[in-house]
Image (cartoon, rainbow, N blue to C red; front, side):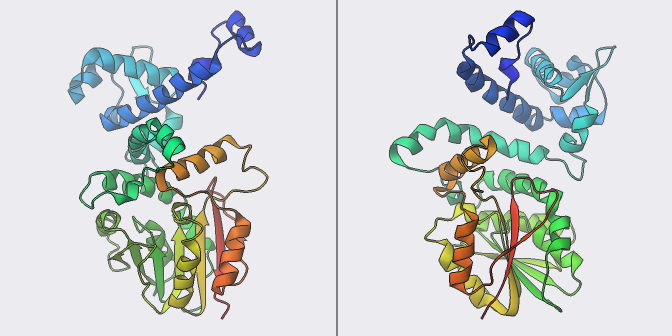
Length: 349
């Protein structure tokens, strides 16, 4: 985020340290500029072209049918931020460090998540509306056929692929578990990896129609439809199918208000078989960093902007689970889920 704040010479660096430079202006301009460059590079196919083979800017523009001059300028921006390297002959290639994250062929790539971030520009622009009227974006209200759903769910899938296998290994399921309900599971990847890790287990993903439509395509393309099926419904209101050995609530609670979560947990409790388990993966407002960590504070505001909710506290989670009839939640240690916490609680009665 410090694109516009780097002093180019000792005098400029001294001015920055002495607070003689209007850094808020640079931050407002530089942040959106960096995001816009990355999103455009993915959406126009520039990133995919660079991942394929080195080429000069003119060739890249010609191959993709893009205007040469702005394409060259955008590529210069990518070089300046280290995403792209320029060879001695002038050819450009995706930087080795970024190939694992931006190459569309990478199994851990996040290019589709970058693409989905382009939808956020309008949301942040209207942040003043939230401040004045308290009105969130409510992006989950879009019709099922809106192309937004594919951008959103495939972007979330990119992030889920980074941690789903580890989550599946670390979750404790009841012996002989046969069924799992993934509430708000979207792409279904967490449920699919859990089923792969536990032979005999099948999953049902409950989510909104637009999300479920994309999730079915994802699971079918992966050849996993025999393990994961989809049920359309709103997690805030839908009745959960019974006889579940596990219920997953991943990246869901921050979309729900404090008034909606107790009812959700009560329905999860009713759907679980004796000895069943509830697993929760989400961002939580850790007391030690809730108001001092830049990423945590911006995420809390983003959640309020997009869902009208907030990032909840771990002590709230414990109280809600106790009231619904679950054991105290146990935090599961994970290595590849920065900013998120994985909890597990058993059905108490």
